[in-house]
Amino acid sequence: AQAEKPPKPHQKTEIVAHRGASGYAPENTLAAFDLAVKMKADYIEIDVQRTKDGKLVIIHDNTVDRTTDGTGKVGSLTFDEIRALDAGSWKSEEFAGERVPTFDEVLKRYKGKIGILIELKSPELYPGIEEETADLLKAYHLDKPRNGKVIVQSFNFESMKKADQLLSRVPIGVLVNRSADTTDEAIEQFSAYAEYYNPSYGLVTEELVAKAHEEGMKVQSWTARSKETVQFLLQMKVDGIITDYPDYVK
Ligand code: G3P
Ligand code: CA
Image (spheres, rainbow, N blue to C red):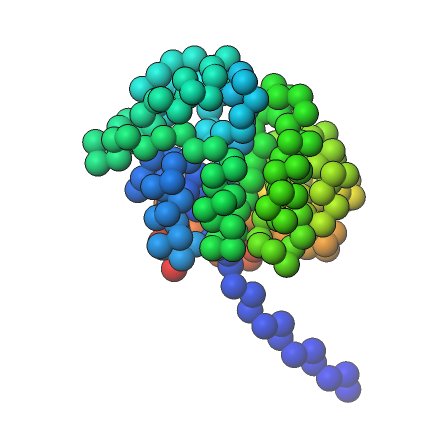
């Protein structure tokens, strides 16, 4: 009789702190990233955009309105204007004075300490941002996997094809939130340039995860904001859980 294959060792599910430990501290600030390190997350997730004068900064929305005390588009404000804003008080007075970090500052502070899941947010608004990201990662020697865990992801697939060309040794992720991007055909196409297939949790099934694995991609799903969602994603055998509450996964 054919011997049974030994069971595969259980791979640990990686914890990705979404915009930092953003359930507890203002998203995309050093306070939220430091807390993610303290909570022993495996990665911080960051959103990269560009100021009017060309500085790469970490902020989620296309305007500063929700997460700072200012108003206006990220791409229409200078770095000095954005840096002067308070990015903490909206969450709680305890975080008054937190600033919008630069991409450079985040790489410098967290390289080697925690993985960094880098989202290029609306790259279509910032032509050339893929090249600028590649240059910065190279300056920190993060274009080689042995120097630190980084992944570059986006909802913009054309941008990720470019990033893959520029950063051949950095894993690329596609962010998926439409069921049209869950077909076998779509997944096969993504696998031509991506190493991570990252769907919203509402799209996740065991079959979807298995299909991505079959095509050689890992799966990190988002955004888990309840213990039930964390539990569900663990059952679906995803490789990583992107969550505002990194402590829930433990
Ligand atoms: O990392 C996944 C997640 O961040 C994508 O959605 O809107 O939070 O950037 P969003
Ligand atoms: Ca994001």
